[in-house]
Length: 122
Ligand SMILES: [Zn+2]
Ligand SMILES: [Zn+2]
Image (cartoon, rainbow, N blue to C red):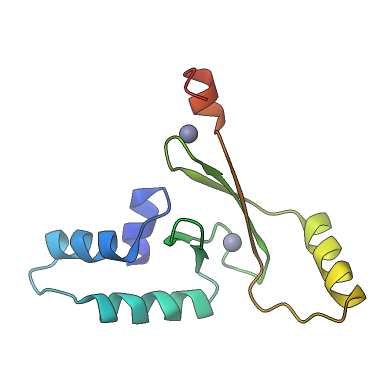
């Protein structure tokens, strides 16, 4: 599953994954299985969910707990994950300031990626 997400290279919906698994495996895998696997991978910090796309991407830095900062291209659908500790501490400070306990820390920034701008599509 994780392999499929990496291969796709862009946020992928659960149903797309079901279809991709169908092509790869002879035994069919139902959506509930895919959702369970995704939940597990998210709990492990290996996969992040892009809520605005209802799609999943593999985490670029699964080796440690981190905040995911995603830049998502509205044109080609690609996503780039950045990691910035300044941003993470800023978020923690602000959460502490209002006494908020954050459990899902994924920031989504939508726009046009460099490649699309270069292609004149943005
Ligand atoms: Zn991440
Ligand atoms: Zn793009």
